[in-house]
Length: 309
Image 1 (cartoon, one colour):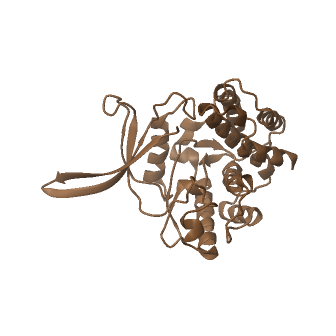
Image 2 (cartoon, helix red, strand yellow):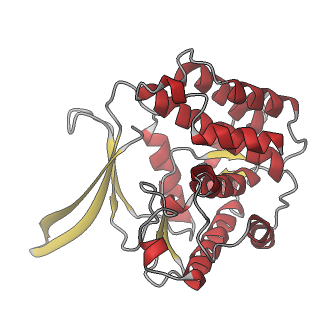
Image 3 (cartoon, one colour):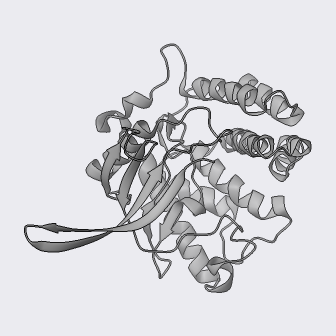
């Protein structure tokens, strides 16, 4: 519903030499009810292209973007395949898979902390010098207000009129309590374990994936999204956190040390994370015809708990 991902190999001759390359293709979705109202593949590709060519952040090397729909019927881009391990989303890593079954607490802590350092590396980038101004909000709006306006439009589009009172309350609270004088960096947007390729020994990050939600804004939003997603996979689903994963407090402290930024607005952005993920999950429920779960799914329920806190 968000994208189509294909893995394949290409074989060809170059200067009389046989060449073989493992690739990954990412295609725009062609479904009646997608997750997002718009899907700008060229913008996503541009973000990755700059990161790949101008920074040391580990991202997949790009091979090409094709916007002509006559080729495959939908726009797509191709990357080189990166070897490594990816924590599971379905089922979540708290319910099965290699993170639960094949590695221990020390390895889990190592990969988690390596991920936080990579996130901090992203936030230290000079987004203006690198040319990320194309992500800037419209004149007269802060980066945060532009995002809040987007998620208001998303609520109206994605829920198709189905009520979600907690999301309405959270959005109103977020508009009324916006932090002042915020720092602005390039933000990953979808900062979570499932968007990483991790080395086999769990000591480093082989690639940072999925830039469809990349924005300019306060970098604390990536930190809060990261922790909130993990919380939904554990507390939200009634599952224990995996032994060895650092606490929220230790995670935030490491990020502050590595990035040089303060996490003082963390609670605000935890609510923001809950709103965004809650709306996306509500959209998934609408798309699947499960209208009774729009206002009561496990993400929205956790958002209500965060609001109460």
